[in-house]
Length: 369
Figure (cartoon, one colour):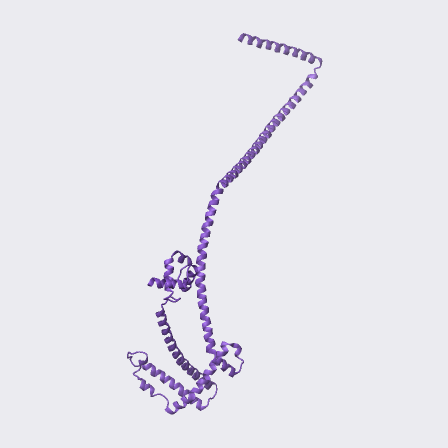
């Protein structure tokens, strides 16, 4: 029976993607994605069943009703407190403004009596309330300076003055509250500032309705903003998951492509390094040839320099020998024909000596053999 009811509730909600969307809309605060519901159909059915018993905030129907009643009671007590607090603060402001006027100018005696009586009543009542905690707690508290509320109440003004103050107070308080309400209307709609008092009073009667509409619109905007935030979080999570998948796929493609072209890259790198090495070697060879040429040029220059120096020294020696021979020749030319005959004889004798030395060498070589 329970299974049949549960199935009926699920059918009422919908099926497939429509069911997933309805479940997600029913639990905006739950961190669940449509993919989670697709992968876990039983969990999706459980959430669909819970939508019949809980609201969007996760509260059950009875608890939601109790919460609404508690909120209504709280709102009622809050209105009562705000009403009394507004009246009390309004009376205090009236007293403060009175003393300001009294300081700056002279006030009529009846107003002076009115505000002094009102101030005295407020202060005595407040002190008596502080001395009597029975309205706020059931426990007895020690008295302040040994005073009792009855003793403090004896300080109230006379009955006659209090009665006059009570008769004039509603008019004064009504006038002041009306001024504050009109100021509130002007603050709510600044363009109403220059309108007549009657028109402002008419609009004041509709101010609560306008404020209630603004409050509801603000709450609706907050709820919409909250839903948009949840939707944005889900979309962001979905986007990130899809982005991670795309990155993984891209990494796989990059790795496959790298493995395919790695051989070509290695070959191109090898060719590049070979060419670079050949260029370096060619450059080294060129530098070595240049160094050798420079060395050869230095050696050649040095040899030429030595030969030149040797030739110059030999030339100098030959010039000196020539000069010496010319001097001897000059001395011999003085002798005349006698010298020529002696020179011819000397040459003949030298030739005979040379011939005999050659014959002696040849004979010696023949005997050695």
